[in-house]
Image (cartoon, rainbow, N blue to C red; front, top):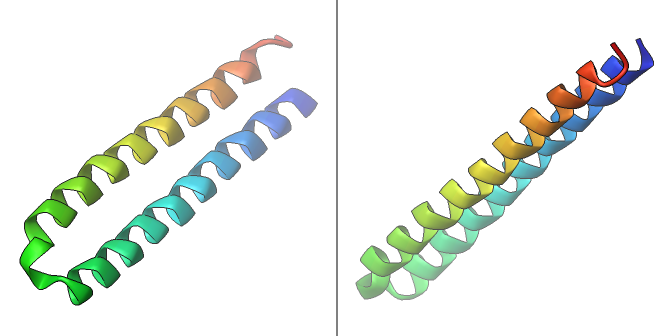
Length: 73
């Protein structure tokens, strides 16, 4: 019971961290594109790669949190 609550909390924190991270990446990329429009292609490519890596780490965190739910069973 308690382990399930901790696993849900861990999954929620992983998703929250990913949302904040992707928001930061997107916002900084828009700032960079606004300052140097000629570099938009390079900035967009780097932004997509960074967002994918952040999303992968968040998915890993959610899976680990949910697998931790089965430890006490």
